[in-house]
Amino acid sequence: MCVQTVGLIQSIIEREGIATVSISLLREVTQVNKPPRALFVPFPMGFPLGAPNNPELQHQVIAAALALLERDDVPVLEEFKER
Amino acid sequence: MATYDDLSLHVRLFMRGYPFARYANKTVPLAILAKPLNLSRMALITTAGLHAPGQPGFDHSIKRGDVSFREIPKTIEVRTLIESHRSYAFDHAGIESDPNLAFPLDRLCELESKKIIGELNYRHFSFMGSIVGPRKLINETAPQVARFLREDKVDAVLLTPV
Image (cartoon, rainbow over all chains, first blue to last red):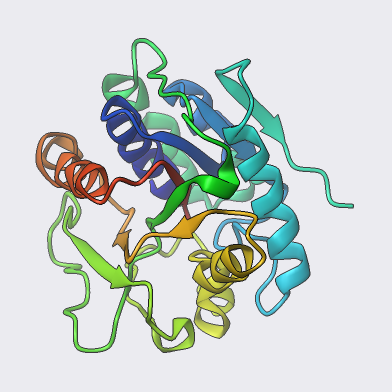
């Protein structure tokens, strides 16, 4: 339900005129929700940024998500690929 | 990527039966980032059910879900955040060991220092995502946070589930 809640909040903020990007752990839920920008991550529920106490991996995920903010071909739903 | 098949039987049956489409967007809402990231003010929103010491935890007794939110100051020590998420659909050990796993405020501070993002807003927001009946979230609490972010002149928001 966390993934749905993110999608609902995301839409409301985006409608307020603020650009948003979300991380998604469940493709099935996010695709129904039609967010403007989302990054699907290959991690289990509870681990959206990959791993605890792993700043390098967390930075990789954030960089991939933030890159979607600057894309002009929205809506954009992309898969995260670890380097 | 988790799929429904990774979830416990109980959660999977719930997810398959839940009317996600009822609350979904009919069209994709779009706001364009008006300036480059290195000039933008950013905020973070999580649904990981985190709260700061001294703030009340999320209420597990509300059957359809606690739609309230906690304002998390930029200056918080992330490791002191407390997780009170009621869901048993995920392993809580990771976020308990490092709240940055779902609320990467330290990482965004590092990006601010490196001038990759312009500025981090002075406040960020935490919800508890286990919301089965989201009407009040849609009509009240999420719009309230959206208004706060607009008042704060936030340009971009990163949202993270758990």
